[in-house]
Length: 68
Image (tube, rainbow, N blue to C red):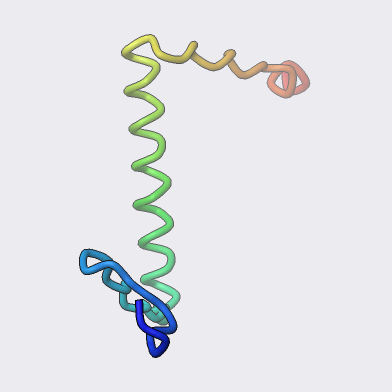
């Protein structure tokens, strides 16, 4: 090493470019949120089908009884 070298970076190390946040319209944000939520639900259903997680408890019908 030389006295002139202050830092050494490896030849294989490249700095990743900084990605700027993209401004989305309200409709685009809604669309992305809807897509992400449906994708998450599909993954959850698939895990339940494969038996990786137990199915959720059935929802109660206590509110329904008030109307009867």
